[in-house]
Image (tube, rainbow, N blue to C red; front, side, top):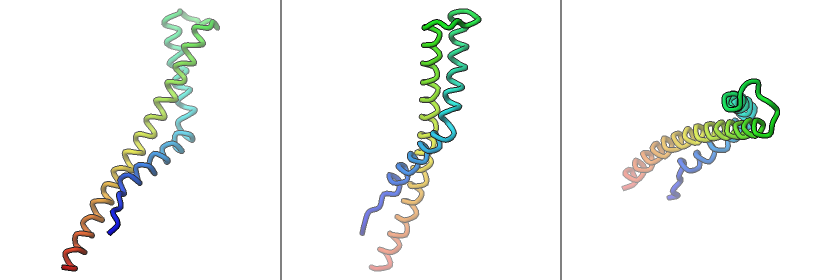
Length: 106
């Protein structure tokens, strides 16, 4: 009998869906939220109003990149975990059917 491991397959499918969902729904909000956090951080460190210096722009840019990375990690991790869970359930259900088939053939 062929040993199918649905958990691995569904984890990869879930990760792919997570990447697509991140590209559609997470990229722009991640950069917006990261930019706002960077502006707040630059304002608290350098004083308000935030000047257009190199350091303040660097702080905002780094926080935007971190915001996008956190959004990507959240989307991909959540969808991979969901796919793994569904694959594990499918593996459990198919293993039970295989055991029943083997018992009936003996």
